[in-house]
Length: 479
Image (cartoon, rainbow, N blue to C red):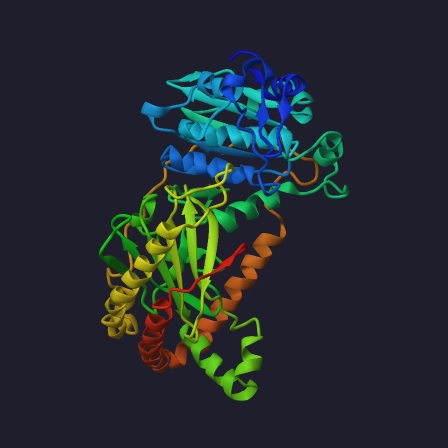
């Protein structure tokens, strides 16, 4: 492994000899035929994380592994052998200016340039191909302050693949952030990185493992999947972009959602799919009781039973680039529709979509397809509300093992060497205790609650059909 390529120094040299235009792109004076360096200002400070997700998806990697400490975050993925990017390929694209035609290399180059020019963070990018480590690409003050041993640790790879390790510190934050993080005012950027992945990349076809936990199983997602009062009812997956049929996989009332793996059909970037979520059995009874005592208006303002509108998510290479809402007339049942948008028009960053008539027609067609397929769920309600349904093969599939590598160690910090916030386990324990208490509370009335749940869903599915027949969609920026 050689000295590597200093991207920060290269861009500084190029900047002194070129000009920056109003779009945030950069023209190199010595070679204007290349037109642009393809450095675009990403809309968000941590959007560079999403470009890494898009690169992994465009390479069709088996998974994206993310490990964090308070000091740094490491990303690891394995591009296929036929399209493996050598360090020379990446350096060449960085030096000459990558374009959309360069595919996943282009996405990775945008992420690296954003780290240098926007986030102002240090990083080391390392590749290993056929057992040989390439020359690392690096930038930033914090990396230059690392010792030789730690810098080699950041670039270490136990097997073939690509590893990007990003420091959480800027400029003079290095010492205080690394040695006294608990008492300093250094931003805890690892939380923002994790939040960016959880909020906009949770539907990535390439599985994402954040510190060993998969965050791309929609059944476990805290906003659209399992919650204290809501549970997934079914996932419908098309077999292709222009699919004329939708196959629903349903989840019985007695099934333990935490045991259910992500359907294999979600592994394709060209597959449209939807998730339908509804009340958990006990929550339905609580909702009705609260409706009688509080009134419908006040009830909708309470957080316990607050539900989202139906949503349409436009997904470009594993990242949500736009979402729209559909008016919801159903009481506690919500549909979340996910449509591939890799072939639609995007801005220069690849993170914002321009929805045209073709996109509108695609959404309308898929909504009608979901409406036509809802009877599949209605026919199963008897089974879904019975105890025998919990053990049926209608809900479960064998767990697909994701080949793992040794944990990507990325630095240390005194007092708080481990990451992922000490509050998270306490919060998770509290949720587990609440769920356990609710199960015990509902145990004497299980069969009665399940029967009421079945009757409730019969009406809800009819309302859902009416809702999704509505072709008016309002745009939302955030989710």
